[in-house]
Length: 275
Image (tube, rainbow, N blue to C red; front, side):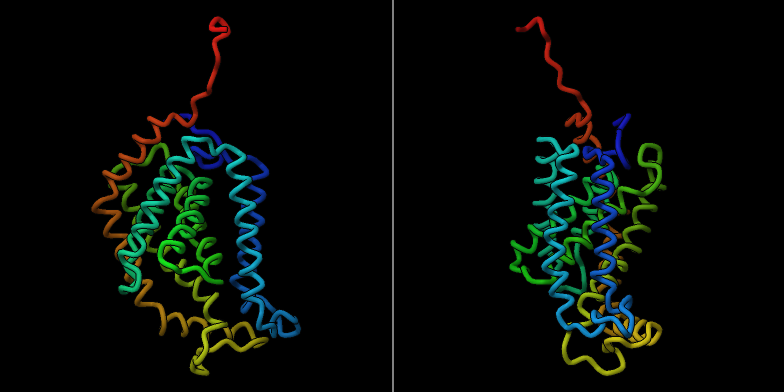
């Protein structure tokens, strides 16, 4: 594939409005996830017990708007078809490892898809895949919008990695594996920020203190991550690395071949002589 236009390349061309929407939803997402650490002691938000529910109601609307804007910017019928196939595969992969030491093979697919198809497609794919997966597994709840946004960031980040048109071979695989490992831990950490404030029965040493000093709450949060989810994040990261290094090359080749054959950049023209 050559001459890919738009931010990061791929079948979705991100225009200024789509980029602005991505920046806006990302900024709101940072607040939605990080309010326990961001809210000051004098902030009403710091003492609100309904903040997670407020953001849970707000995020799906915003994610829907961003996905619609990205689709309007260039998600044609061929890209929609590829999106449907990859989202279905990702949703089907998730139950294979869910509940087993954090082994989630769908993360591997999100890394490679985001790399080949670009950040815009990756953002949409992450949201759609997590939504479809929640419907498939019955995992619909207030946590779902947070999972959708986190997975969108995860796949979009792979599309923003350097050298999409130049870097190939083992170097690319190692870069994707390293990104998958780091991003797997990041995914688990930001999802912990969502769960930290609402999980009942935590020990006082790791529980969230509304309005507490930032440093104190940050230490509590890190201990919470280490004692509750480190093993899950490690399993997710290791599996992503192993699958990327062992099965990444043929899948990258298949995705690139499918992208070339889809000819996302081909411009439809009509011959006036045929009238």
